[in-house]
Amino acid sequence: GNAKGLQADDTFRPLIALLVRYAIIFGALYAALDIAGVAPASLLAVFGAAGLAIALSVQGTLSNVAAGLMLIFLRSIRVGEYILTSDVEGTVLEIGLFTTEIKSADGIFITVPNAQIWSSQIKNFSRYKTRRIDINIEIARDNDLAAALDVLQKTLVGHPLVITKDSAEVVVAGFTATTVNLQARCWLQSTNLRGNSSAVRLSVHEALRAEGFKLPPIAIGNLPA
Image 1: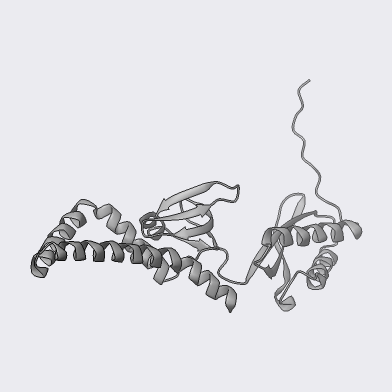
Image 2: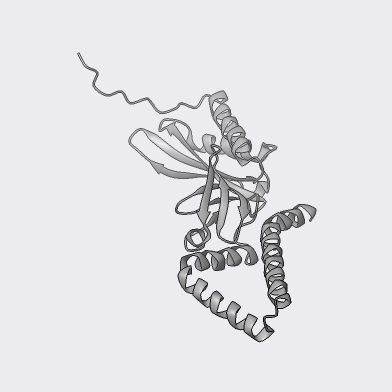
């Protein structure tokens, strides 16, 4: 759609601008030397030798360029997407030839070499339109377990923010000496996931409280005399 087209434009625009800039500089330099009477063959030899010398001296930089091109053309990440790598987490602001600019969730501007991103595992939280959330719940063991599962299932299916109702489920995840551990799973829109997830979790808590289910007792350690 139009949003994807604009996103793609934002991703490619810095690269195109940089390539055009270098092409203009190269063309102007070539024209100036040609006007000065330097033969085209000599120009190519000079540029070739200079290019080789530069390539050998900036191998690390070239690896960042190669990684940047791979990130852009393979679309591993796009401008506006929220990603997590082994070293950084945040929203992609720009993918340049050498570095990628990222804004963290707490508003910090981060610059990361492209090779560092390319060589690490990338988790992209924005690529798909829907995301599953898992809600872990503990209730006391003397509750009616079947009734608790039924209340939670109805809460998920009836919640306006939960999509694909047939995939919503509540399972028993485990037991302790005093509690039953339940897990409610449902799918939400990726947009505003944090806020929507909080709203669904609150509804789950309120539904259990309204039906009178007991929460596990709070463990209190030995207090000083």
